[in-house]
Image (cartoon, rainbow, N blue to C red; front, side, top):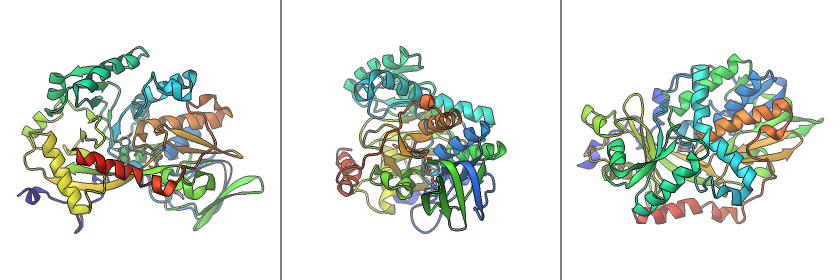
Length: 433
Ligand SMILES: Cc1cc2nc3c(=O)[nH]c(=O)nc-3n(C[C@H](O)[C@H](O)[C@H](O)COP(=O)(O)OP(=O)(O)OC[C@H]3O[C@@H](n4cnc5c(N)ncnc54)[C@H](O)[C@@H]3O)c2cc1C
């Protein structure tokens, strides 16, 4: 029976820690903050956004303290799938201009288009041990109509100098080992990483450059005192001239203007047992990673140990840990002929914080405080870029470096109801899958 072939690694329930907890290289030992300290810049949050900001601030010689409530990568970053996807979610290089203006749109396209390269360059520059796989990122098309528009879409990137092309159905079939797509867009700069190893590596590099990093130091209050920002943790405080809020889902609790600005998208990630030789020859034989374009999306990638890592959006229709496990197995069998009896070793649920614009946002909170709010389920590349740009903007005292113009946050109307929307939409999408 199918459920007999599904193994689990941890605990009694079906859920486990992310596979990365077992496979990522260790990070630096970080102590909690136990004193009152002063810094030029305080960064709150040790995910990709905050850690990249801290690294580049320290490299620029700026006195930087980072406070992380848990350990580096303990929220979205360490729970993610690790796909490095240099693409828009909803917009395109041609349509973005109508939303934010032509010049600003081109700027954002360059940032997003270059985001995967920024990740792999950073990995190379600092020798980060994080299973870097710059093998390409694909978005397969499930209909001829979508394949047709993707051919034109590839051109929008090509004319701007990016390595993006459409691969036809046969090549897609050979590339993925999946028989249901009419072709796929290939983003040559994309790929995948071990996201926990990545952020731990950035932490180590930041520390090496002189940033002061503190773990298990949740900021309980952030306030203006005597013309400076003061953040208090359970056992210490930081006083800083400027502050970067990079706490993602935690930003709303740090500053009232950030309340009700994001919507939660629940995603179930899972990893199979290492594939056997026959399966590895059939499934993603040349590597690469993909996320398809159906609302009830499907993703796939491999890691160094041969786990096949995939995901599905959580809905009201698949409830409870055992149901998640059955759904994971169903989706694998639906896509991969080479997996008859899926064995799932890791399954975990994370929450991505989505902006209603589906675009990365920077918020200006006044008095030298800026917030990065750019998860959107796609932040590995983009939040790396934003961290680099944020540090450059602070170091030069100029916003020229920013591809995203910081604006005043606007709460989402009827937020309590809107927060149910992603799961509701995914429930509808699940019905047709
Ligand atoms: C299940 C899932 C799968 C995903 N898959 C992908 C993918 O394949 N590819 C991709 O590009 N993106 C993916 N994403 C999105 C990506 O993980 C995020 O966009 C990115 O990691 C966000 O980074 P961040 O630094 O902004 O936030 P986070 O990683 O959430 O970091 C914020 C940090 O702030 C800390 N914090 C919170 N409150 C406080 C406080 N009061 N004081 C101190 N610290 C605090 C938290 O502990 C946390 O470590 C996925 C997300 C999820 C949830």
